[in-house]
Image 1 (cartoon, one colour):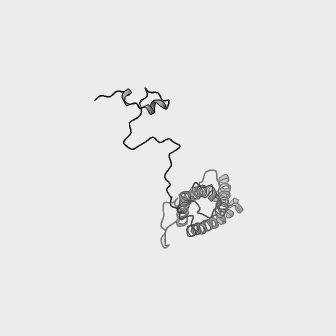
Image 2 (cartoon, one colour; image 1 turned 30 degrees about the vertical axis):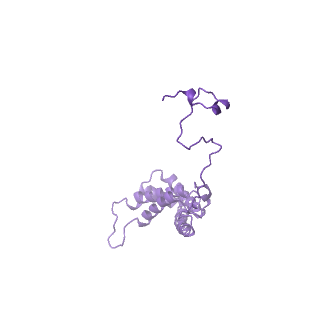
Image 3 (tube, one colour; image 1 turned 120 degrees about the vertical axis):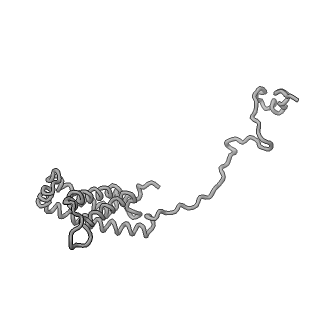
Amino acid sequence: MSSTFSERTTEADVDTGEDPNRTTALRPFGVGTVSETEWEEPQEERPPKARHIIDRWDGAMGLLVLRIVVAGIFAIRGLQKVQHLDVTRTQFAQIGIPYADTMAFVVGVCEVAIAIALIFGIAVRIVGLGIAVIAIGALVYVKWRTNTIFTDGQPGFVGELELLLAAVGLMFAGVGGGGWTVDRRFRRR
C-alpha cells in the first residue's frame, strides 16, 4: 500500500495554483494551518504591580527622616571645617592625612554638598558612597589610629558615630533615598 505523491494530491491542491511537487508538513488530525495574522495572544490579566516598600509612605517617611538627620550631621561638620579652615588644615597635617591643605577644603565642601543632596534627595546612591568613604576615612585616620578602640571608664567604643555613618552610607548606596526624592523619576521601574 505504498502511495506516491501524485496519489496523495487532491484536485483542490492543484486548483489553488500551488506547486504539485511541493510536500506539505504532516499535521495531527484536526489541526489546520494558522497564519500569523490569525494568531491571537491569550489575554492574561496581570496582577497590579506592587509598590516597593521604600516607595510606600511609611518607608519613604523613614528614609526621609534618616536623610535629614544625616544631612544635619554632615552640614554642621562641613560648615565647621570650611569656616575654620586653618584649624582643620592643622588637624589634618597632625594626623598625617596626605595633602592636608587641599584635603581640608575638599572634605569640608564635600560634606556640605552631601548635606544639600540628602535634603533634596539628589543622587542618593552616589552620596551614600561619599558618606561611607568620609566616615571610613575618619575611622581609619582619626578614631582608630592609635589601635585602642575601647577607653577605660567610658561606655561604648571610640568611633561609634563614624561607624554608624559608614553603615548608613552603605545603606543609602544600596537602597537609595526612598520614594520622596528628586531622583525618583530617574529610577528604573
